Image (cartoon, rainbow, N blue to C red; front, side, top):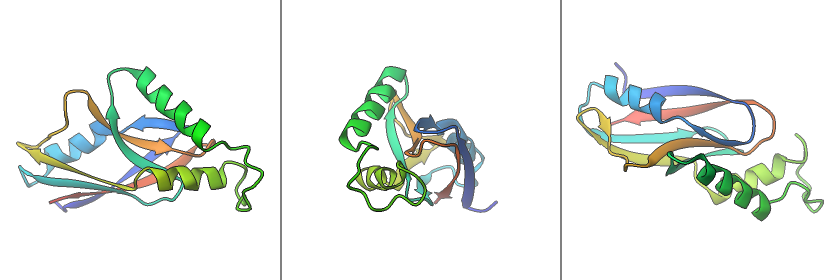
Length: 136
């Protein structure tokens, strides 16, 4: 079994979409019982995040905060080939992160009690996103 996997994530639109279960499944099937799980998103208008996964209001508050920080009504953006959310999505991605590293042991991610792994979609329309997972 390869140590590199590609997760295809279909997002319905803007927001935090939890992918913890899919990543944990790969870790559980890994030939390595322990190591470092590295995730990398192959896009410039979405990002990755470790955040609370127990209370959905925490995710809603993060989304509202980031949308206030980088509003889509920015007439001052010149990059808008794919719509008014195009450049704001790139800025949101630049403010967050494109990669994560999470240790694992016993084929289990060493996330904290309330932590989950999220793909943060910054575009309004549905997208298919690719996340590279390396288990080493």
